[in-house]
Image: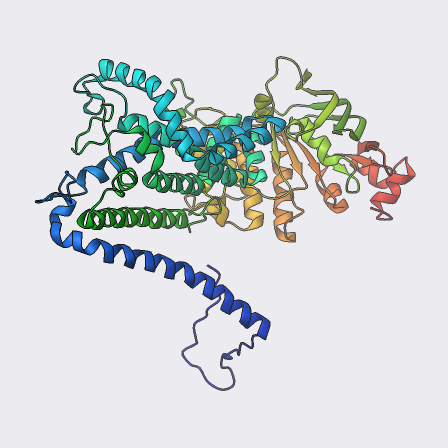
Amino acid sequence: MAATDFDVPVGLSGDDIPLSVAVNRSPADRRFRLAARASGASTLVVMGLVAVFLAKGAWPALRIAGARFFTRTEWNPDAANGSFGIAAIVWWTVMIALIALLLAVPLAVASALFINEYAPRRLRRALTALVDLLAAIPSLIYGLWGRAFAGDALAGVARWLSRNAGFVPMFDVRGDAYDSSTFVAGVIVALMVLPIATSVMREVFAQTPVAEKEGALALGATRWGMVRAVVLPFGRGGIIGGSMLALGRALGETIAIALIISPKYVVDARVLERGSNSVGALIALKFGEAGSTGLSALLALGLALFAITLVVNFAASFVVARSRSGAGVEA
Amino acid sequence: MTFRTLDRADTVPGSRSAPAPPRASASLEAQSVSAWFGSHKVLERVSLTMSAGGVTALIGPSGCGKSTFIRILNRMHELVPGAMLAGRVLLDGDDVYGDQVQATDTRRRIGMVFQKPNPFPTMTIRDNVLAGLKLTGQATSGRDALVEQSLQRAGLWNEVRNRLDSPGGALSGGQQQRLCIARALAVGPEVLLMDEPCSALDPTSTRRIEETIGEIARDVTVVIVTHNMQQAQRVSDQCAFFLAAEDEPGRIVEAGATAQIFDAPTDPRTADYVHGRFG
């Protein structure tokens, strides 16, 4: 942003030549640069190795399935005439993540705002700790809880929704089974990603300059008016960043979903109906019994998930970098 | 999720067709005001009358409670955690801390300009000026006229008339401060509080703001905190000298007409301070 680089004047002559500044780094500086670069590079190396390992393991399965790997919905890699594809599995993985985000993001924004702007100071600390505590509960516990208790309650909600709003394709249900559905999994995953989203947003909201907040209040704004005019625009990057982090976690969630859903291998929009699928859950469930083609197919599935999360994360960092919080004087 | 959503105010029926004329200025009277931060008392029974249409300067060394006092006048003090106060503040005779009074209404009637310019950096210059109207849900259809009028009164119009849609954060410090004055004037306050408005500015910008104060004082009561004695002498009609002895809360030592405070103060501490012998 600052104009550090300068244009060399056209008519350069005489003594008036820009210096080429020599940089003499001290040994300590050099060692630190080396260490920092090495640790930075190691992240990329590990990522690259994971990708290479997955691609190598997935290759046999990908050769068998060809392009239909992306379009088929069934998953029978080890059968004699095995056919398999990721269409249904990825579809439901994304649907679970979207439902989770749809519920978690508004709740996270509201919680973050409440903790920062509305809660009395003493309550603020307790609430922050509580939200962080939510993140410390193992996903296995969420899964067990979702299967044993929450599933029944949510099935009631799902039944009510489908009876009263069944004309919406998403709320349509064939048959009378409302448990183990995409919806139930999505709600449980929403609870799991809520803490990370809330704490990212809360930290960014807390950076809002007090001077700007006071400026709004001094004009006669209500607290909510101040939040809309100052805190939310400032925290836009945090809202996006927190949501994307949550999306990444939701896409990769494994054990809780594996406990909740019963697998189905069709692509449809009926999220309230029994049956769903997920990349992580499927890998966890099928890994032990997989034959050689099956194992390769699972690695290919893993590669697909790896690619999806990578894209999501890059998109997120791109968006966050573009919308620099608050300071964004985009002139 | 941006500020734009507030534009719904446009469609409120019965909106006025012309910008709000400046309301008549109001008098402000502090009666026996004390203030605390937690258990620390910072102001002790301060009483001061700020007459309608006048400019009152609050002077005194740092840490004597001037800023706290000015923030009590428009109920900004209570936003600080642990802040408490006693006494009454009468705006045209009505206590702004009365049971029926909403802080948001008081803050709309008593505007404020802060020490550090604080425009909304991502909003355009135009939206900055109109921010108060949107935030308080006031409707007006003569928006362009109001923007021009407010920027004129703040002495900024000629510099920004061709770039009203560029962000407020891109202006220089002095321009930002005048934008903040325009923003405060746009809601039609009866009183304008200024907390060291020039302390972060260069001499030229300072002069512009002093000229602005002289012009708006015709229809707005101005209360200004300043560390600059010459400034107090140049802009104010009356002066109040605050002082806090060590480990004691701030009090008003002397208040009166500016000429009298500077030329013939009754208290020797006032004479010492205004003549630069301490503080």
